[in-house]
Length: 359
Image 1 (spheres, one colour):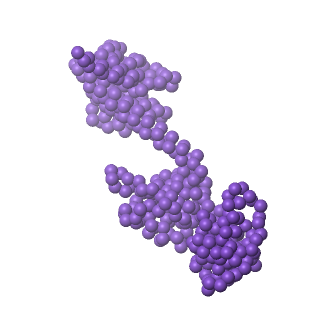
Image 2 (spheres, one colour; image 1 turned 180 degrees about the horizontal axis):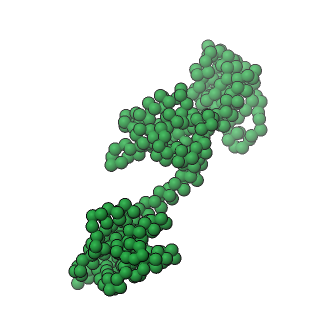
Image 3 (tube, rainbow, N blue to C red; image 1 turned 60 degrees about the horizontal axis):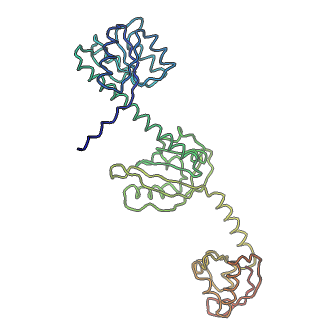
């Protein structure tokens, strides 16, 4: 015969119950702990004692009577709220709508009228557990959010979340450093109006608008400058991902690397190459990715774009291709010494040009 699995034991909830009637304290402790075996009730008759115990002990919930001396339950709740967000339930036999309104104003979590029937304590037990479960769930969300924020803040890239209106919903620490703002200053601001340069605003707005509408797929990499609070321009390479809520696009998460120094170095390198008297080409994966003006003129081309993307062998005469392949193999095998040799190059018109090559 298969035995049913035992029900899981309810989580423990430690309750501080304050009431100036000892008999009420005894009844409440007895019937609450009978109604829910996970409840542990600590009883005090003095509001001052309750506040003092909260300073040195950990409780999950406070249940307080209303009519007490020298302070009532609303004053107890108000003082608790000055330093804690622990759930507070006002439990009274002399309440009214005015009392309930005043209690919720100071921040209590629930308001329950006392009844004499034992079954009433089952209701009270459920309300206590509901308030504590809600608080624990909220705490878990906050902990997970804070953990995610810490991960974002140690990231070496800028992370920003925009809602569908372009407002900043999240900015990590790296983003704050690049933009020269605090998270508090950035949150809620319109990204386009606050952190983009005027010439780029409409272009970027258009891209984001199309993304949010689902008309285009996120661009894997996209570069555009941002402007910091001091007016400094930084070039960011972005990777974008759409965020969804119940199947609908709710925003966009963008991670961005600051490539400003890289671009400045590339520009300096380009200017040096352009100013030189020698023809220069850069080959990556056997394709031409850069040629300067001098190199173009040597081969009879007017525009570098006519050469970019060509296989490097296409501009080398067949008689020199074997030599070029040999030099490439030597480099792949670890020979990093510069080599100077002659190559027969093919010009645009099909004629040859003898060039000294340094690789």
